[in-house]
Image: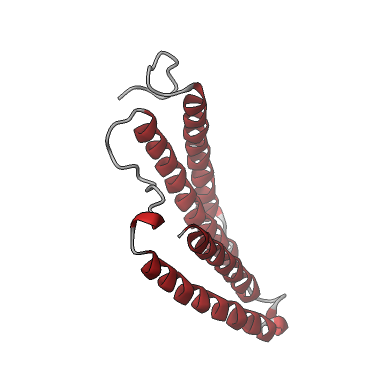
Length: 159
């Protein structure tokens, strides 16, 4: 396969080559961050810090995978390899729209219930906010729930 950063490549545009270079360089940055986080987790004597850094490691692994998927998808698209991109095309208009919307509505309802439950739980944890990681973990789950809602709203908007 042609190297996307090679300006002599006939297929990709300059924009595609630049974007590919940006994505792949970010993969390298993510790899370095992942290594630093992993090393930090191994070296610390604090169980709490180790636990939290390992949460960051999991996020960095996911970020690394997403950037790799984006780069591979761009490469497949720009070089017109005929392969399905790793990040699929938005196909909401080519499937049973009603089924997608119904599933999205049900999932959104679950996430909105989760928002309320996590807020309630956060209030219950006020007493230990300065002596445990629990409040932080619930806050992180609240942020994840916000992300889930954003994803589902995106699907609903585009379906």
